[in-house]
Length: 338
Image (tube, rainbow, N blue to C red):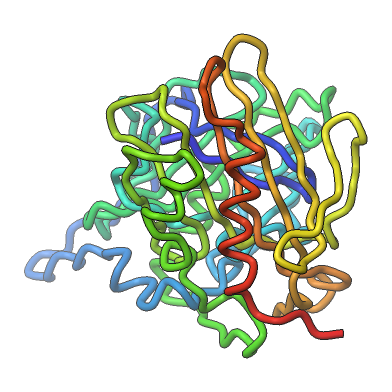
């Protein structure tokens, strides 16, 4: 499945690429103790509990990441993941995102290689690395869930080993999960943290926008929803996400424009890939984002974003469709405090 995310506060397109090319290793396998019971497998459902209230940074202990020179948390960009800045031993730097939690039907990376096997049923897996600029590692759970850990160079000239960075943070996350230190948070009443994005859009609204023949894909943490056909890649797709960032504004006049939709100031952004597809995003800022780490939340707001992707030659205009969807969603969001 293709997923689009907002990375580092800048609109972008991220595709779940196949990954990695790392040699197989086994980490932390204990010696058997005669008569001792086998360690019970750790399931995602047991480890995370109510995934919609998980603090995504509770699966990261930046001070104990192995195989890197240093790691530190950076400004939040979503409700479902934890961004980390990594410096490797050769000085190269990478941006790593730990999360979101996914179900197995979200995995489209093809055959995966196990690079770390753990005695509690979790494995760290990667797949074929299609790009030196992007890599996903996965903490795979025995109950058909996975925690996606993605890495990319922090700058165009970083030359970071992105798969090594992703695996290092995936192993760190597995350690925190095994230690049972996952925390939960309570969202304030004016937050979208407890709003189900899949529940805000019905088939009728999508059909009226020209998006038909699709299925609904919900993510376990409940802050992203994706609508797509499971068989026809020529049909338009849509996504509704609740993310975090600075108040949306026009960053590039060649792609961005302002609009007022359902009474809410919005930024409309159109990206066209020659001979492939066009993606239109519409973002509106909501209320202040709160985080246990207030320094990582300073000046940030929650953001609702609608995206519509159409292939070249489609009769559906992506921005017309996205505006129609946003017009139905925006009135259902919490009022913005002034």
